Figure 1 (cartoon, one colour):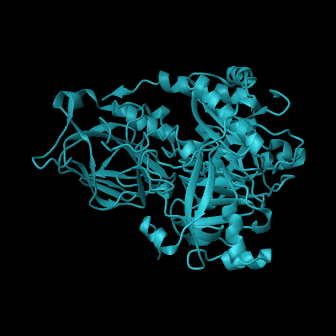
Figure 2 (figure 1 turned 90 degrees about the vertical axis):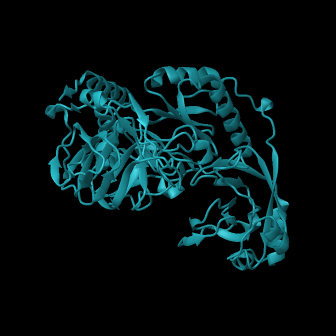
Figure 3 (figure 1 turned 120 degrees about the horizontal axis):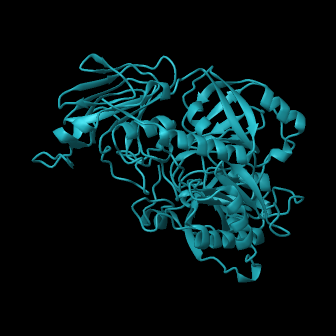
Length: 238
Length: 326
């Protein structure tokens, strides 16, 4: 079902529809900040107007999964309501996200893949670090694990494919790169991203308010800190 | 009618875990509305058995229960209360005497409640009248071990933990002994039909691939858990390798590069980048979660409207079912 030239609506499951915000013919792997802004705007509209019948929403790069309450609405009615509502989506209205600065301790000690990335990119380690913190990133999606924010896009020169075999233990706070995405691991977990530093900020803390420093649509800049600053900010080294 | 019993030292009382079994988890209906933080649903793998466990205890339908996978849980009651066990046919004993599933009954302080191992099926639900009294995190008591969220401390039950509950007055338990009629009790088999709505990237699977998917039998592989069931059988292929990561709904059938389907369940990750051919309806996901390695499934394609009908039919069947007063 087509809502306008770029938004279309598909079935996901018994109680879920999915909105796609990129034209079908377009390569499905293109990441676009513009599309993601529309996603964010649509998410806000849906939360404002349909929260009575919606159980949950998962916004991502170019889609929103809409999970609805089968006792309150059926998919026909929800389709119609979404169609009406999303006509209001308008690029011009989208506001820029908050700018959040995340400190990062880049070093050979905290970034075990820095040398590999530098070799792969034919750059020095210092250049890799400079390119990573030179960029302002956008929070495109949150998922995979609580507090895990997908940030994009990394400078093409330091884009690096995931490890062929994921590590069993990536430390909490690891600042890492996969292709043109970067992220901070919210907790120790298995993972296949390339580690370049450590961030002392809690990315997910059930006791804190808010529990996450980031939300989809926020802008993120990494600020290099040294070992002592990292430790002073509560960072840990194993 | 009921109150939380507290000792002089204010320690809540309920059931003491003397053997935690293979995998016993605190669960309520699940965690909703926090996907935006990356938190998944959790909740009972078999929602039908969960529903009956609470109904038999006269509970709210979101009351907290214990989900016992495979078996082996042993508890000692510290209070008088009404309990009910539903789900896979695990041998259940109280003080060594066999007890029937699918009905509520009184246990007294000091009684020992033991679960054996299910010969078929995987999961059982232990409900207590009034529900277990566990502090909710992010609006739910559901335990998701991978996220260290819910339950007593984000993990499966362990020996010496106490599961606090309400006690029920004498008049209360006279009224509350109920049984689900035998013809309404589910049978757990080693084969399940999974009604599946074609959805998501279905257009990236050719007519032939779809035909293969819906005509072949698949076996449950050794990778089956609350996150998802990896199946083994005829490989099918999408005409794309991956997609931009997107939201994954309950029951979504992911087809990774090796062509072996994965049905994603309660503890699934919230977003992912594998192509999906469709989504299994919720009532069949519950049945799937009672299968183990080597059991088999078939997929059958249905429309969204048929899925809607099946949902409302099974709901009205639930509402029409009268429990028997014992």
